[in-house]
Length: 303
Image (cartoon, rainbow, N blue to C red; front, side, top):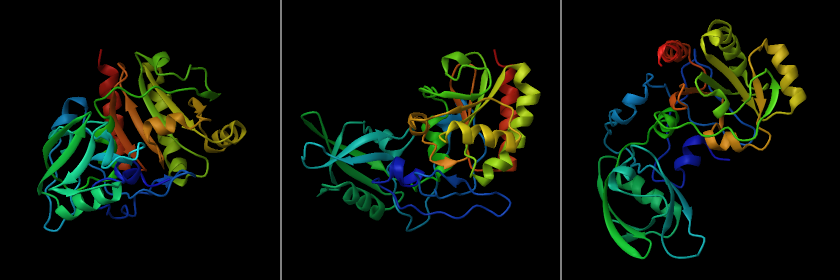
């Protein structure tokens, strides 16, 4: 499994580079089926009303270009590269690319494999305007995209989820707690959803904070829910060792991890009473947790 940025945009038009998190912030731990993601300092929290208005990054000279799409080889063996998904607010979306399109050329040069498209966009550079030959159905189009520098993993997640409907939870097994672990079953409540594991050091550090939120806000309409893919007995035993008293569930199939792209641990989602994602945090950050708690209080007061 590749890193978050690579799995979402990898085969994508980007040059993936970043820095390790500062020492006070423990880095996110990769899941057993994922490589460690590149972690960079997280931007401030934004709510759904701001999600579409995030400022675009300014590129330094020589910065690789980024398009913001998930790519795959064509299953039918035809020429060009299949666009599987387009990231919200990305250069690809503004250019009019859609899932299911096939990119056949960049600035007149043919591309036949995802890596060729990735390299062509990266070499063009952030800030460059490129033309894309696109096959949509049986019609050929020419689209223009203004490339950007690649965002960090936190920003990729925020662009993907903040302001959008939270994915359904799928089939979960209850480890502890009396709630029904479904999105519909939690309608009308603010949900703090954490993906965690017993072997994840930052998860241990975050557990007391989440337990505190559970103690203070559950009576006010907040549900803190932890999700793991570890065996039931391991999850239950670890909860006791970590002092976790809030509800826990097991994602035995991994479908929820995939839906939320929680390939680094811990990954935290805040979902409002209407089922919309309002913030995402990867890893552990004390300042960001303060921001998230302030957001939770705000969401409690919302009708």
